[in-house]
Image (cartoon, rainbow, N blue to C red; front, side, top):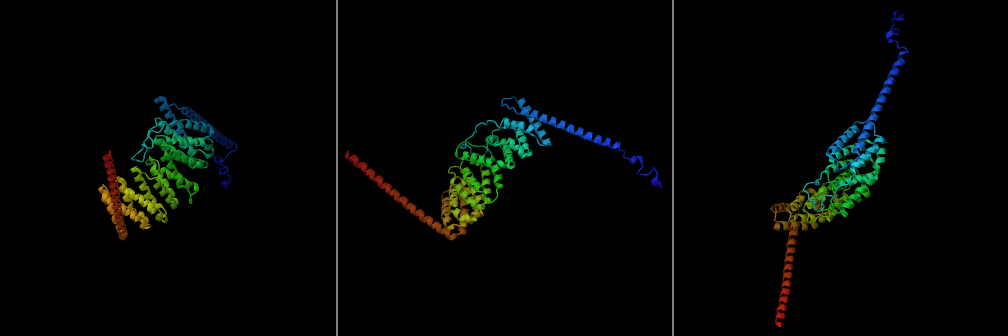
Length: 452
């Protein structure tokens, strides 16, 4: 019966919710939400105002400004970068428009002409001579801001501010002498290529033009060829198989001629990577590349010869084996000329090629054509090369050739001896003819003296 009393749980005053109290709690909650939203809006507005103030200050550049003003500008750029890192919502046009104006005013500036010409650049390492940019302390932060903006902003918004003229201005900055700037620029340029897919054909074409101008129209060194080739390495890696004709055209008409310039040592590593990517995707393209490298083979540049020999060795490993028979004679002829070089580095590098199993497989496809060339080169080195180490390596390779085909080696050696004997006979006849001509001239001179 106690359940019917006033002390029951339903009638307990502690558990009773009166209609008067419920609206008060709801109103309190709504007020808090409204206040929080107003505070957040005020905070965002103040944050936007602060960003606009920082952007406005950093938009003006003066190369002659004092170090104290440069430090102040750097601090403001750091402050702007920290705000961009922590902001949650996407930046709107109110901020993006002055921000891209600030980026353009700081990045797009006249660059000094290259210090070194392509003829004089002969470096031992892979890095270019770097001329540090005086304004790099704040340019580095500008590039960090730029990269973060490209990564976080929507494609539709970026398309408003990044157009063809903007991309061409970015491409011009690859001529900067500062290695650090080119590295940052490479990251930004590649990020734009990855995100703004509708600009990819234009960006590829503009890079084509830079390469072709460098190879065929100027003697000046372009510091950014290596960084552009690094971008192309990632682009080629994403090509689908079978390759399009425009991509094969780029290999044949752009990448292969890039072996021609005298200063190509500084970007050869990136160039070889791009070429190998093409050959790995379609091994039959190896013939075009190998014949192109042989076409642009250096005559007096020993450093380039060493690099070319190494690149040929890598290409032989990836080229279609069905092409071995066609490539064996021109390739082995060039390698033989290199192992006969008076430069010991070139000769030793050419001899080390025969440690590669793929070269022996290629040799086995055209032994009758290649063996006479190789035997002549081996014997020439053993008889007259000045370097003891080259002679020793030549003896090792000769032993491997004799073990592979002893009868053919002996036959080629005999033919070489007959050829040398014939050349000696020709030389003797030539000397006899010249002696007769000299004697006849002397007799005529003596006869003229006697008459006079």
